[in-house]
Image 1 (cartoon, rainbow, N blue to C red):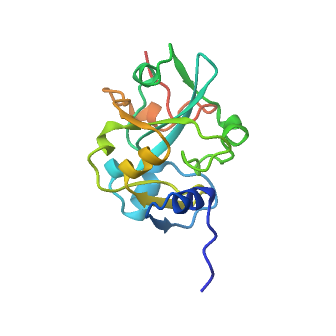
Image 2: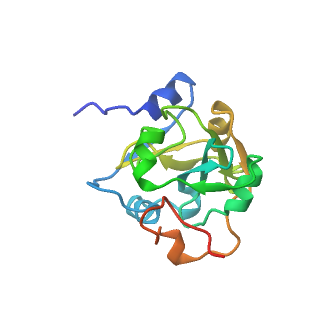
Length: 180
C-alpha cells in the first residue's frame, strides 16, 4: 500500500493537534465543488469551497461557504471591516495562495490570510474542505479550524442564489460574481 503524501494543510492540522480524515477521488483537472461532493457522497451543505478575495485596502481574505451557495461580496467586506472585496482572478490563485484552482484551502497557504467561515458551519460537528490539492478533501471540526487559524464565523452567503453565477460563469474569476 502506497504511503499517502501529506499536503501543507494536513501538516498544519497535525502540528495543531487537530484530528481530520481524508477523502480522495480520481481527478485530473478542476471540477467544481458540487460535483466533488456528489462524487464523494458528501452533503452539499457540509462541503465548503474556499474563495479568495482582495479588499479595497489590498489585504487578501479567504471565505469558506457551502459549495452550492453564492458569496455576498458586501456581507463579506463587512465581515472583515473592508469597504469592499473582489474575488481574485483564476490566473492569480497560485501566485497568491500557493495552491491551484480546485485545491485551494485556507490552511497551509504561502501566507495565512484572515479567514471567514459561513456561520452555518458554526454548529456543525464536522465539515469538508479542500485538502490542499485537487482530488483531496479533508473532514474536520469547523470550530477547531477557526480557532487554529484565528478566523471567525459570519453570514457571508447571498440570500438570492443564482445558479449561473455560482458555477463561475465569468471565465476569469474564481467562484462566482454577485449579480446586481
